[in-house]
Image 1 (cartoon, rainbow, N blue to C red):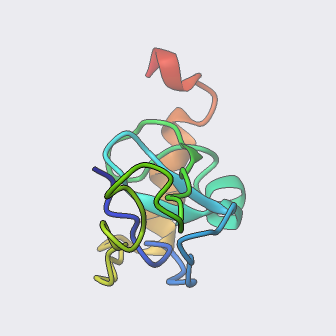
Image 2 (cartoon, one colour):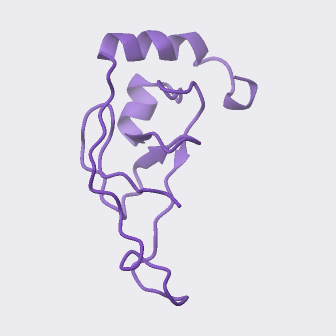
Amino acid sequence: MLEIRPNCECCDKDLPVDSVKAMICSYECTFCLSCVDDTLKNVCPNCGGGFTQRPIRPIVARRTGLSLIHQPASTERINTNFSLKELKEFSDLAKNIAPENR
């Protein structure tokens, strides 16, 4: 189950549970749309994969036991250990390779 992390790992911007600007890779590394587009060029700086929009967990349990009330989002903030320069250098290596070919 997705943790639904609360922030962008790059710029530390808040990414509320209902944000349509939260992007994740297949390992659930979480970044804001601006960082994915402008800084990372759709290259996850942790695994090298691509990003997709993070799903939004329903507020209301339309099926018994399945909602934010039952499975709350994470409150643990995660930030990258890499400098902005390192992130850009890493992204530059793979930005012209489609995610499915990385």
